[in-house]
Length: 153
Image 1 (cartoon, rainbow, N blue to C red):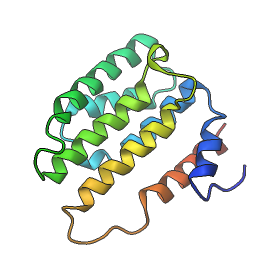
Image 2: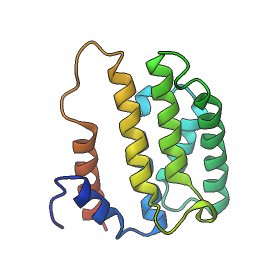
Image 3: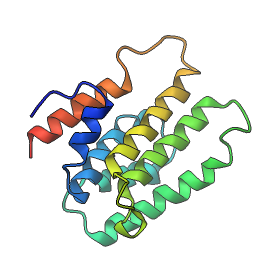
Image 4: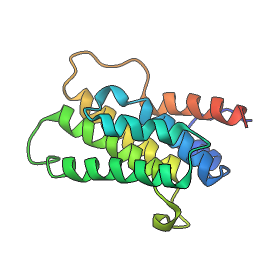
């Protein structure tokens, strides 16, 4: 496996994954920003997404829970400057992306990529509230996580 150095490499690697493996890696990306989550249902949804043996019904239930919370919190995005609330929304959006059922997917979408982007948005929002900058970027953490995940295939 070649080293993932940029988003182009990441997207290419993600395209090689089955739908279930996209879900699991996408859930890993969402779990990477779980510190910004405020809802237990979203945390449980992420745990379901991480389970490669989760049944379709379990995945669908987890998707519905994450989607419901993401929809509820969406209305808060942009109307105020509560950056941590917006980060919370994007954690739920990352979980939703990872758990998206096949019926809602298009050929051009990739669950893991969409979850990665939503997780980055969570970090960006949280950084608006944090006094100290973080070491390393979320993208770099995702590259490492994807490399490790692909190495287990």
